[in-house]
Amino acid sequence: MEILQGNRDRDAGEVSVLGSDPATGTRAWRFRVGIGWQDESAPAESTVRETVRHFARYCPRPRDPEEVIGLVGLETKADSRTKALSGGQRMRLDVPLGVIGGPDLLLLDEPTTGFGPAARRRFWSLIRALAEEGTTVVLTTHYLEEAEALAHRPAVVAKGRIVAEGEPGALRERYGTGATVAWTEPDGSPRALRTGTPARAFADLMGRCGGEIPGLTVTRPTLEDVCLRLTGQSQEDAR
Image 1 (cartoon, rainbow, N blue to C red):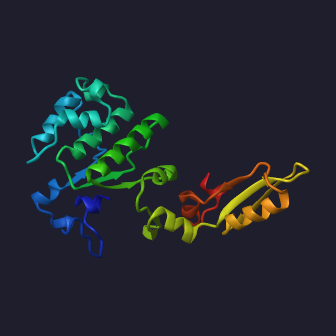
Image 2 (image 1 turned 30 degrees about the vertical axis):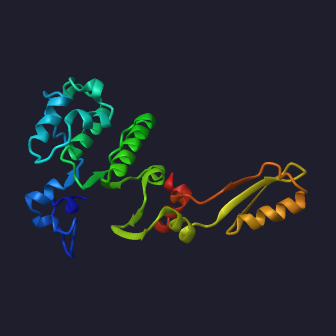
Image 3 (image 1 turned 120 degrees about the horizontal axis):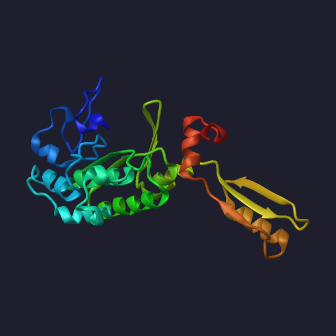
């Protein structure tokens, strides 16, 4: 991620972000790329509003500071000093600092680490809103449910290399191990079948059961299943 930002030199190969090499990106290029810093860059004694306004002064066409503060739900903390914010609130402040310049591209490196469930879902809503506005968001995460909720084109990285990328449905179809159809037999015993044709399995069960299928559930592969298969981990290893 730091190489994409232009903050670290690559060892080899070529990198292009918005048509430019980040290592030699111009000032105009840098204004097109927003970054979630995660480096305690906000002055501890400044308020949230002062911090966002300060960053806005460096941008040729900044967004409204009050608007971006509201995007992350910090409007009630706008006059609080950053040192008084909780850890989750400080991380949410990274996003206004990244989007204040109205970037075409926003780079976020594991932005929800340390968030509680409610804060994480508020953050997801923010990312969706930015995407709907036309901002491209590149986000890294170890939370597979986060990738499931947000990604239009997820990429799976293993040992420093991209081993698969594509639309979520295409990845599940290509690398998933099929759907799991579960039901309860007339004697009460649970049964399960993994199949690539769940509709056919459903039809067979309908014929056997004569209509209603007790305890029927169909579970399709998730991005977590895809990731574990591609990285060679088992479910037990992942825990």
